[in-house]
Length: 315
Image (cartoon, rainbow, N blue to C red; front, top):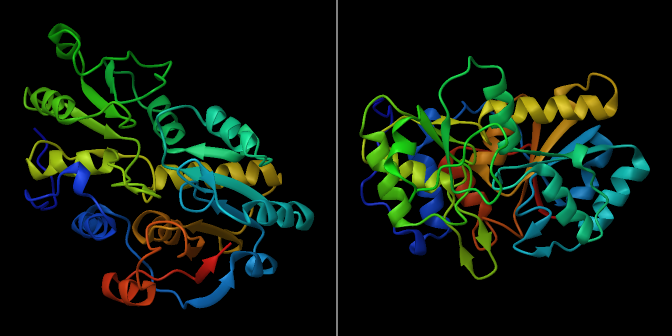
C-alpha cells in the first residue's frame, strides 16, 4: 500500500455538505502534492475581454468560465467572437472526464458556441495521453464514468469480485454514479495490496447554482485520509493536463507560442491559477460566476498565497 505523503483530516465533510469554504480547506490540505507557486504581480480588470491585446491564446476552464451547470455564462459568446476577430487561439481545458471531449464540444455547440473538438482538452485526455506512453499493465478498473474508455475494461463497483482481483489499479473519471457504497468497494480494493489509484479529475467540487457537487478529488481525499493510497493525478493543477493543452494551442496556432503569451482562465485558485502558474503561463481568475462568487477574493487570495496575473470580475 502506497502511503500518502500529505495529511488529510479524517473529519472531511459528507459529500452533501460541501461548500466553497470546505473545498478551499481540502485544496489547502493537498497543497504539498500540488505544483509550486511562483510569485507574480497582479493586475485587476473589470472584464476578461480587456486583456486580449496582451495575449496570443486563452486556455479557458469550462465550469465557472463557460458555464455554470447547464447554463452558459453571459458574454461568453462575445468573448469567443472577439478572440476569433483578433486571431486569438482558444482552447478549453476542463477537468471533466466522464465523457469524451467530442461530447463536451457538442454540448458547447448546442449552446451556440463555435468550439470544435480540437479546441477541447480534458483531464480524461491527459490520463489517456500518459497511459499511452507507459508500459502496458493489467487492466485498470474504470469507475464512475458515463462513457467508458475504449482502451480499458469497465468494472463497476458492484461487479463480481473476480473482475476486481485481476486489476492492477482503478481510475476514477467521474462521480455521476458514485456514492458511499461505491467508495467502500474502492477502499476494499485498495486494501488488498499494491494497487494504484488514478484520479483523472482532481476537482473537489463543482459550484452549481443550487449547491456544490462532489467530484473525484473529494473521494481521492477520502482515500488519502484513510491512508490507503497516494493517487496519480492528471487534471488541473497537475502537469499532464497543461502539457496537453499547450501542445493543442501550438497545434492550432501552427507555431510555438511563448508561454507568457498564453493565459489560463479559471474560477479556482488551486486548480486553474496554481496549475497555470506552475506551467509558466499567465493566469486570470474570474470571480463572479464559480467557486469564489460569494467570497471576498482579495482576502482569500492573500490567505492562501496564490495570486493570478489578472484578477477579473467578469467575462
